[in-house]
Amino acid sequence: MKQSPDDVTQFHSVDHTPNPAFFAQFMDTSHAQPTAQSYKQIIMEQLAVQKGATILDIGCGTGQDALDLAQAVGLQGRVIGIDSSETMVQEARARAAQAQLPVEYVLADATQLPFADASFDGCQASRVLGHLREPKLAVAEMVRVIRPGGRVVAADGDMDLIAIDIPDRALARKVIHAACDQMVQGWIGRQMPRLFQQAGLRNIWVEGRQMPLDYAFFQIAFRGMLQRAQAAGSILEEELMCFWQALEQAEQEQQFFARVGGFVVSGRKPA
Image 1 (tube, one colour):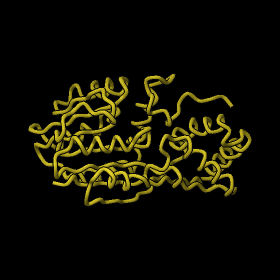
Image 2 (tube, rainbow, N blue to C red; image 1 turned 60 degrees about the horizontal axis):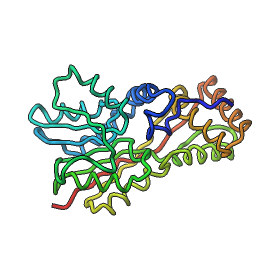
Image 3 (cartoon, rainbow, N blue to C red; image 1 turned 135 degrees about the horizontal axis):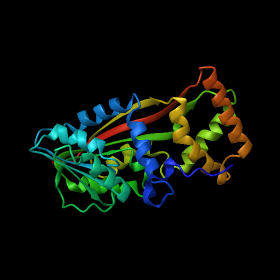
Image 4 (cartoon, rainbow, N blue to C red; image 1 turned 90 degrees about the vertical axis):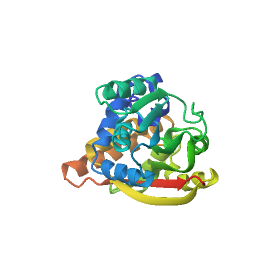
């Protein structure tokens, strides 16, 4: 099977992939999913954004979350989005050019933030930690740069909490585990509360959510990932073919079902 260049597991190295534009397109498609807005609302509520606040968005991607935060803080506030991808930062700047909002985008490493201690009132990381090789360092950096009493909020999936309905249970389980293991941090959803606690945050709050996936989005999200798993020997080519055939049949019969579990976690820096 030909290796797909469009693989969501490669968000950590967007600029070095064959098709960097795919990742911006994927983010747009992901933001359009019905549950994306509910996740965003929870994050905003947990950040408790006030007018005039200064907020940091880790792994800003195309910049949409930062724009929404900028609207919330108003013209007296400030929002900075950081991303390790030059492609993403340029795209975010282009999209924000006419917005007339207090937002800026910076090329930076989440594990080495170029900001002084206690520079921000709050910090968010939405679907970012799962792509980092050292998420513990990233959480520690988020805590460092927020002021005492400020909040850190992160949202991410847990790739072993995928529910798929196909006749072959053993195959479904094998595919789910193979997909999880292709992520840099496939279990990050369940690990975030511990990382927050280890970073010294208090009043840690956790909420689990399930994201329904239609067949079109499932293919975009998982085809490249599973081809990588097959190339790594985690799943056989014929098994992967059977898996996609089962999903295609379910879609044709209007019985396709897939969900991926995730968590939103927040914590407060001690005053």
